[in-house]
Length: 341
Image 1 (tube, rainbow, N blue to C red):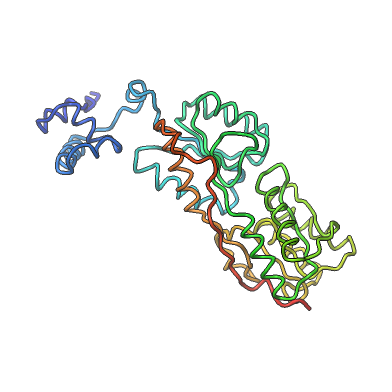
Image 2 (tube, rainbow, N blue to C red):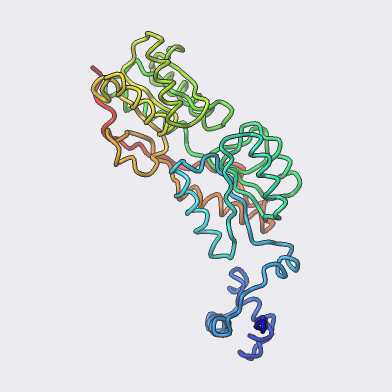
């Protein structure tokens, strides 16, 4: 025989309180309106009876599914697990489940997955794979879906975004290289259809100008993806140009690792011959030789910041949300930089 499903009425009968009190006690948000002693008593009774909430019924009643979509550009990039943990540290205690989708930095795939999330009725979306021009997510936001972008932003849009202080990070890195005697510095820029790539390239030009470092256009190469293969390709392009340089500032860590490998394949030592730097400080960099000098961003903190903003939007508190949240960064000096020869 099928076991009878335990309901809120059963818990109310067991504890001697009203059904509405049971409902509030079992809601991660509403439980703060009643005493802790009552919450514990009701939760203990629910556990003893084997109560499991009916999310479908609750969704019909509240018009919420208690799910959020999290869109990431590359599931193989180890920078995202700390970010996802930051998101879930905020949302999971409140009863939300995250649906994580991987766009592979492909526009058509991103559009399809956005439609999937909307069809599933997610209560909001944290988008870490957004393009600078992204009509699909802009339309979703205009339709009333709460959206926050993370590490990137949509230009000419009112979608709130959480980004890093790209200017400060690039400037700190260039100043570090300059102090080591480098004045011919190449730059492997990120994809220019992404705000991260565009902002870091613009920051490189501004910081070089502020520090009186001459920027030679032949020493700037743009990657099509933020990965190791593109880092190697761009480094090869720089060497083929025939313009001497003593350091390479890369727009992210994966580009830097690809560049170092390309140097190694050609018998060029990093950092003795050419210094290489990254950006992000992704996990496990201290296990790779040479240990990469980079700019550390707040990964877990960025996830938390985006999740808190999304909560405000989902609770109709958009008036208290800033369009721009810029997180501080930190220079991390390791082994991949050395004095210019």
